[in-house]
Length: 352
Image 1: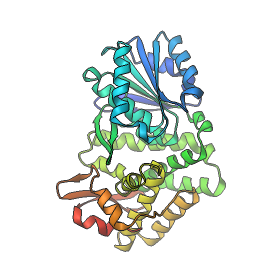
Image 2: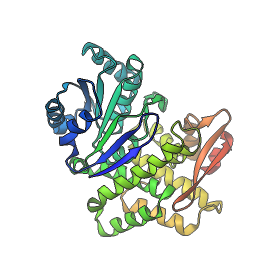
Image 3: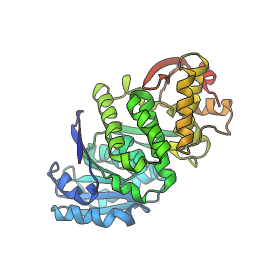
């Protein structure tokens, strides 16, 4: 077991432990004084892990209700958010009760936003079951739902009270979803950790990713912990976490969210890296290694959408402010730079 302490407006532990889902009641009971919890999950994850989570929570003395949503990005919507709030009200939840997010990023974002806003805020807990959620979305307190024409446009900063990452849960994760998580791991390596990048190259060559998952998850959580500590509310330095996301979110939106988030981030990472290389900001050898790693993990690195389509879709990105937008540019493996550009110039940084 490994534990990472996140210091923020609400400080909490991220516990990385094989079998941690079976002990979630102990961990949550150690930090939560309420007596009632609602487990929010989706219709793929809940049949696998719901019973054991509820059993662990009840063994720790909690009264438990559940709310299950359809799997997929379409559930991260205002209508599903309203349904969850109505269910919480029907369960007669009060400000002393809490939510448990059991699933991937969609479940975590939806649950966190409901927790942030129900009766002006209640506690919630993250039990991520995807690699993407373990290394990224479950930590840091960003919660949101999507609008028809924009991803994560309605949300709040609301830190969880505890996160339990169980790497053994990845054994039931479809390969496509596991690779989506690898895209976020590659992002972390490019923006801040040469050692992690080299480890991923070794895993790619040796097909040994599963043996290193605990180390990979812990490393990514530590990187994010440090960034969140410096800039919890995304006013500056935390923007580096958006590496690959401006173009990636555009790809997602243009596909009607049929393109998975990790796949879109991989495409966005390669595009912005290529643009940086062409401008002499990123060594060609580093670009080749980034592209090689993305390809090696079976992730997409190009898209059918044109520069013009991607540009127009990118203008709705949250990182745009007025007539300018912040772009995260890799300048070496392990280092990035934030560039503030006029929105009109963004099209020049899109390199399909």
